[in-house]
Structure formats: C-alpha cells, structure tokens
Amino acid sequence: MAAAGLKAAGGSVWKSGGVGLQLVAAAASTHSCASKGSVDGRAGCSQPRAHQHQSAGHSPPPPPSLNGKVKRAGDSSHAATAPLGSPVEGVDTKSYLWARYHEMKKLVYDLLPPGVCSLLNPAAIYANNEISLGDVEIYGFDYDYTLAQYSNLLHSMIFNTARDILIEQFKYPEGLRKYEYIPGFAIRGLHYDVHKSLLMKIDAFHYVQLGTAYQGLKPVPDEEVIEMYGGTQHIPLYQMSDFYGKGPSIKQFMDIFSLPEMTLLSSVTDYFMTHNIEYDQVHLYKDISDAIKDVHVKGMMYKWIEKDMEKYILHGDETYAVLNRLVNHNKKLFLITNSPFSFVDKGMKHMVGKNWRDLFDMVIVQADKPNFFTDRRKPFRKMDEKGSLHWDKISKLEKGKIYKQGNLFDFLRLTGWRGSKVLYFGDHLYSDLADLMLRHGWRTGAIVPELETEIRIINTEQYMHSLTWQQALTGLLERMQMYQDAESRQVLLEWMKERQEIRSLSKNLFNPQFGSIFRTFHNPTYFSRRLIRFSDIYMASISCLLNYDVNFTFYPRRTPLQHEAPLWMDQLCTGCMKTPFLEEMVHIR
Image 1 (cartoon, rainbow, N blue to C red):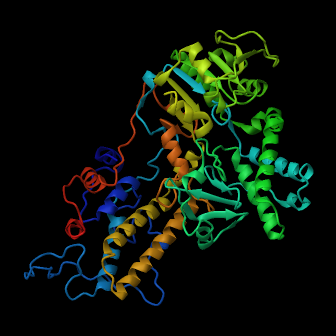
Image 2: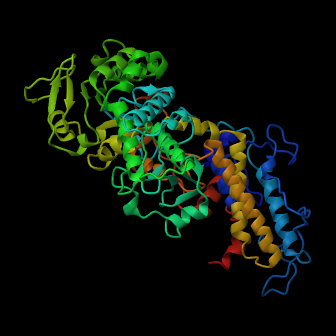
Image 3: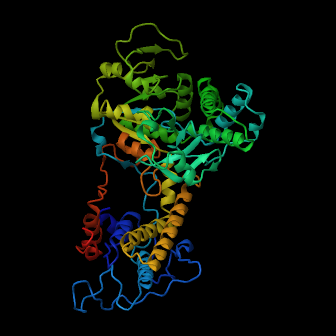
C-alpha cells in the first residue's frame, strides 16, 4: 500500500527503526491495531496469549544487549556494530536467537500504527484489472446469487430434499435420515476426488493444503493424503480440471448452490465408512449429483422460494436501487440466466416491482450457460409471459420481449454489443465469466458473497495480530536458518512449531475445516487464481455499485512481485532507503 494511504489511516508514515524487512512488508499490508506503549500495557490491544513463547522444560533466556562489539570474518577490528544476523561476542547462539525473537515481537507490537482495525470495507469493490465505469455503456446480469441473493436457509432445504431422494428413489440406507445439513462445514472452491471420496482445498500451484482433506466428516491425516497421491501433495493438471472445473476424476465446486452437495457427499461417505459398508465411489458421486440436480431441474427449489420470498430473498431493495440508478444514467441493461422465466418474473416483481422488465433492454432465460457462450447451434426463441414459445425466426432482439436459449454469437450479431463497453456480473467464475473475458473481451464482475464475512474477520485484532506476528516469525526463520548447531536447531524447531500453530489458528477463524476461500496458509487458493483470471472486479454484492460514481475508475493495487519486494516495499512504506538485513544477505547472493 502506498505511503500516502498509510498516512491517511495511521496518522503518519512510520520509520523502520531497525525492523526486519519481512516485518515491514507484513506491517504495510496488514496494519495491526496495536497501540504504542509498553509491550504488555498497550491501550486498545493486548498481546495474544497464543503468541507468547511457551517451551517444554525451559523458559527462553532474557534478551542480551545487542549493542556489543563483534569480530567479523576477515576483520580484526572490534569497532563495528553487530550485524543483525551475527551473535554478539560472549553470547551463545541460543541466547542470541531468543534475543532476536523477543526484539522482533516487541517491534511487532510497538512500531505499528494504532487504531486501524476495520481498515478494509466489506462494501468495497476490489479490482484485478483497471476498469473505468465511464467506458461501460451496457450492464449485463446473471439472476441467481447476482440480482437475487438467497438466505442460507435454502441450503438446508436442498440438502434434506436431495438426501430423501437418495433414500426413496435410489434406495440408499434409511439411516441417512439422521444426517442434517451442517452450516459452515464446506466452503466454495473445494475439489472433490471422485475415486477417493476426498474433499480438499487446493492452492494456485495445485498443492493440497494439508489439514484440509476430508473423507466423510473426518479429516484425513497428512501422511495418508501424501501417500494417496504417490508421495506428494501435488495434483497434476490433467487430473485437476478442464476449462470449466471438471477433470477426469476431480471436480471443483464453484457455485454457492454446491455447498449442500458437498455436505451431502461428506455425510453419505461418513455413514458408509462408520458402518463399514463397501460402496462404489463413482456411483456415490453420480447419484448425489443427480439427486441435487433433481432439486433444481424439477423446480422444487423454485417453488420454495416463490412460496416465501420474504424468507429466502435478501436485499431486494438494493437490487432495485442499482438497476434504477444505471437506467437513470442512460445505461442499457440485459439479463442472461439459466432459470425459467416464471421464477425470475416473480422474484423480480418482489424485488423491483411489476414493471421490472421496463428497466431491461433484453431478458434471456433458460440460456444453458456456459454452453450459451460457446455453442452456436441453439437459436433464440421468443416467449410470452405464460411460457408459450413462438415459432417465428428471430431477426432482432426487442426491448420488453422475453427470449429463451439462444447463443452469444447471435446475441453479438443482433446487438453489436462487443468488447469493453459491456460489463457482465455473475457469481459462477466458469459458467458466467470465463468465456466472456477470455473469448469475447467483455469486462466482468464477480459476485462473491463470502467476501463480506471474510473481510470482517480480517479486520479483527486477533487476525491482524496473528498474521503480522506470523510474517515476522517467518522472516526470523528465513534469516536465522544459517545457525545449525544442535541448540540453534532446537530453537528453530520451536519457532516452526509456533508458526504452524499460528497458521492453524488463523485458518480456523474463517472455517475450522477448510479455512478461507481465498488463501491456503499463504498461497492463493485455486479459487482465487480463477477469480483473478476471470474477473476485472469483484465484490460481495451488486449493491456495492451504489458506493461509487457511475464514471468511477478502479485501479488495482500494485502488489510487489517477489523480486520487487525487498526494496519496493521497504522504501515506499517506510520512507527510508535503508534495507535491514542487507549485510547478512550479501553472502547469500
């Protein structure tokens, strides 16, 4: 983050004062809420107990003074100040390492700007790519989880109904009825290995995040996961997925409706494993997929929502405000959804009013995305309000009319709406956004409802303290690994154990089983990789547009590449040219 941004948030741009480079970078990006003052008596923030050093059998020695004289290699003079990576003469290495540990911990809680919790805004729009709304003339929308946001109560209904279909139609054991939907068990973006009945989180580099692999409702030990994949955590690309997240044996769950499906897969697997019942893993996956599909295709979910829209549809007034504002600024609007017209019509009348179609230049239902974006064979068919299809050939798309199916190539030919003047919003990165960005050059906006909850967690003191100290501790491990005597190795092992404990605690703040949908311990998730690739901007809901002028330009933050970080972050964020640890890094280069 730029220094000016820090000045606005924290009151002034702070100086390094000898703080390590890794810590400065972490501080610049995380902004702990700690107030200045003594380490244990700060106003507003207290040092987390989980971060206080605990050692079996001994307490760490008090920090020795680091201002003594040292004898450096190749230098007979004793006048030099101790480099940050060299023990002080007369102090054993173990004591020196613990001194550095305590010094770094004090810096973490003393030198960061006070009172900057809630720095991130859950209602903000975040940019992956520069985009000016002033250049956008046409706005397109998906319906489910884009224009219409649904209550989580819907997930329980989907789970229970699909479970009963398994029992009553597929003749699965009656004992499955005892399983209920578990809110918060799964997260979006997980991968499922069909042949291993393994639900897991994978990072952007195709590595399984250890501790996040589940068979049934129980975690699989790390060593077993590694054994399953031939001695590695890595999943080869050909197994991972095709363009739409469906590989030969591994599927990625990318939409919000998949949360009950993942929970049902885990629940049925748990039943079979608990009762030692042999089952075919491929049949299990297909049967559950078919049961979930029945809930949607046979219209059961639509009926629940239509029957009690107040219960299931959220924030309808905000949807109206967004659409009305865009129309008032002479923007053209269109809707492309896989849902049937009768369902969309009732939902939009509930949220926007009976004349909702007056806001849209085009309404396309049962579009069969993502095939809509790639398959030229299905023509548009005109449809009346009662659902009756017309047989006449479509030579133009008219405002106020309803169209079924069709394809994007005819849409482009008939409208001329091409390139970056079109911005389309959807919640499914593959079905809604991927083809539009990569094949057709439209601008895209991803709706990620989970973003709001995750940002609120990031804004907590507990998370900020955990992440900042974790980064500082990682920097210590990186720089002090040169000490390899027996006592030093023991200290480093204790630090690594503490680091792992902090990582686990931070993960559990988001979800005890799988953590954040955006990150593994430190790498972006596979979901994040796709989010960055397929969306220009992303936000928690379309109502976030109300916080910005219709001509606003979104600029993505220049996050440093790894080879840029040492100088770029240090100089920009601290306002000084000094690079801590430079002397000790010379021999590495």
